[in-house]
Image (tube, rainbow, N blue to C red; front, side):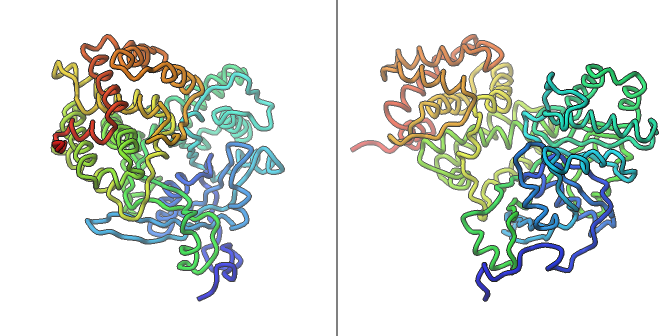
Length: 497
């Protein structure tokens, strides 16, 4: 077997692959998720449904991966590992749909601008992080390029409108994949705002509204990313060097809220893909955010403070695994409007995915911005549970208390690499520095955190019993430790001799 440094570098010169497809998709974002989710599906549609579509990728920030992508002529490998039809399966795909990458901040500006003139261009997809769909008042039409993603898109659409003289047949289908609610509506609103700010005229605004289709979408696939800890082994197995290998799970779901004619233009069903074109994506988003994302956020502080580092370790653990199962089945699912049987099947899929034997999904990778995540993912379930049952959801409250202790920044004396907004970290630092280890101190600390309306958009101290119950958990976790406290809460405590 050849050594890795003796293997050929992956590119179109060294490997016989398909000729580049017509560039019908403009993609903002070159990160792991888009390449392992959207581009993987587009590649499937090319190979199984004769879609004949190439993807040109635009780097949304000055720093990125397009240089590396171009060195490989747009080629890269997606490795899918996980449960498929009840079996653990590992397989890989050479993705060939990406034609090239462009960096509009550098020498690629003219090529980027020329994309507006491509008659075959039909789709725009994006994933510029949750913060990417945001209005930047400093953006101007003449910037090269605009700083914000919506600003770049607005300017490109205007150039397209001008070049094709407002031809209604040259509008685009725009499907953002950023993880914010109703992402297409949010993006469209900002693009229209730029049209007004830049005084681009009523005809352009009408063309934006009538010739272009902004779709809300929901994406679902766990993508751990580049397997740096085993890349040498993987490249030896592949038989070539690939600097852009990306690992994802087998499961995928893409829900697109849009007109039914999209099924003909986006023939995912012919490629056997789990893509749903629906009139209303709200039920799908709610169940994903509350069950999958909510479970991730709930288990992170509990599992990590218990001494577990990965999602797999957490769900396989007798105590922590039972805690998460109970939280989902007893405290989240009852608050959702969809049929319970359907939700439990989805929960089964989620737990099976968490058990993925191939993926080491570190809980610390989920911990980024956990306060805002709890507000979005878990707080709605808590509030709905209280409204329905006139009682607190015990395990969700325990998870909230565990999150507060997690932000103390210590696990068994070792520092935790906290990652959040500076204001959040500063506030927790100040609060925990004044904690004296007493129940009264825990009550004071908890009340101040729950009262931060800029974090929660309400004063959570107003929820009957929440401050008291959370403070009690904070006190017990800090004085007894997570293991003993959780074991006691779940009835797994061992009597002391």
